[in-house]
Length: 133
Image 1 (tube, one colour):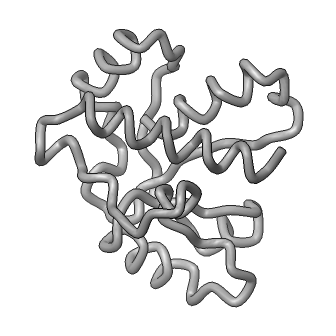
Image 2 (spheres, rainbow, N blue to C red):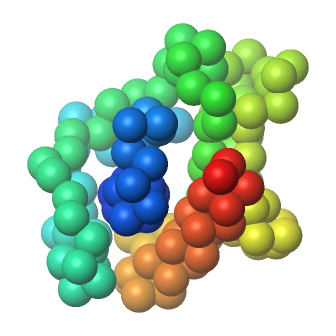
């Protein structure tokens, strides 16, 4: 969800040519799977465009390729840090860090609260974009 929310915000600011936005799973659980239909319903409800997305596994090479690696919660943060072998360049963050919060974005797959997840993701993405502009 966050990939498409961020892409939409960047597009609306006419900054699409300045960003490379992607997403990857920190564990093998979702690799090869499409987005949850509840996620696509939430994106459609909020008028956020999305494309077909098949989850891929994050790699150590992602650390070199991207300026920021962002996750939703502490568990993903630890998984991401293990994949990348540490964070010497300080690129790894939880999304809500960009709005001054240490809170996790609760996984809507477990909570079934896609509305709250969307709102928190949008808030975090807006905070990140403001920092990058």
